[in-house]
Image (cartoon, rainbow, N blue to C red; front, side, top):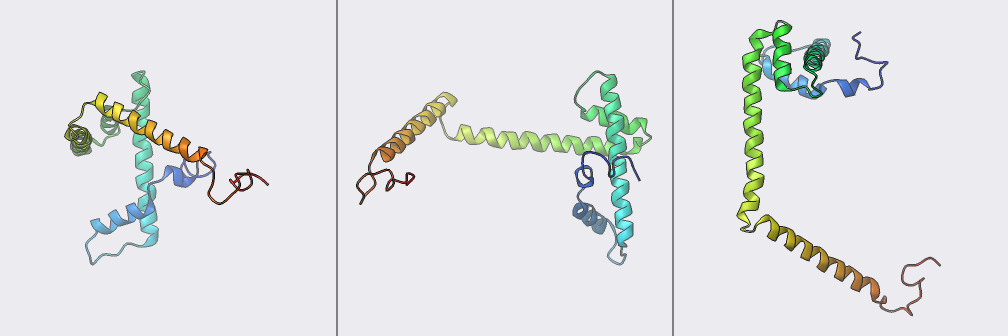
Length: 161
């Protein structure tokens, strides 16, 4: 049993890849005429989890040696090299670059929405404050009006009897 299974403060699910995702990946990787036994899928899931924990632990050590508090992509790449997984570094680097491009694109979409409104940030803030003030006034006016059909007592207005 590995050191992250059971006994620790976090449950096994907290430190594991999603089973369904790993099973789906296994199914996609295998040819259609090959079946994978449940025990084999579980073993592959355990191997994936161990691999990730190994890389994370090594990355953390590299990070600490550099007196950093956050593990960065460079730490993970260095960990792959130190652990003998050099052949994966290029592919991991490419995946990381693709991820960064996607993040940049997503941020660009958000800022594009604001620019399409045709208002400066200050104008948008003033507009928001005005809308909040109008909503406050409507709320206060509704609270001040007596409820229809009653004599205005607290019980009929929703108070405690």
